[in-house]
Image (tube, rainbow, N blue to C red):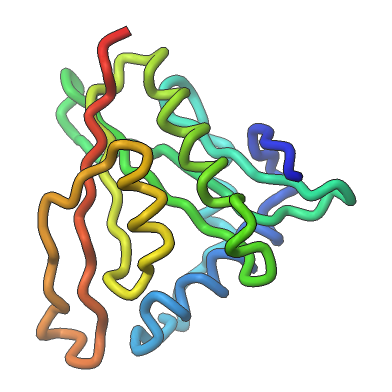
Length: 168
């Protein structure tokens, strides 16, 4: 059983490790940019949490982070910024198949119901059948399959998923 709480800056190292583990599975052919600084990126996301945008972690009984979930802005229009969020869910390999991803995504969708958010978007690797099933079970729909970019000839295709937040 896991406990979900809002992420703290001290969680960054474990968040990055889980992201790296998941990203290399979802997009194994994408070379990690040597200029990439995931610690700074995730520290900024965690520190910038404000309603309706949040970042959560799922903790095991011994306090280890088993996964994380974020809802982050994806609109630049100031009049619409709080109407839509991009959802990201990552789970440590050893915790997959134990309901952690489902709990995290459910946390995000329930949170969205009490906010101005109207839509949640997510990109899920076509190869990630478990997350596609979890998402669909929670009411997400596949809007499109985004093909691999010609700039990444050995990349992966992605499902673009949409969740319409129900009226409160």
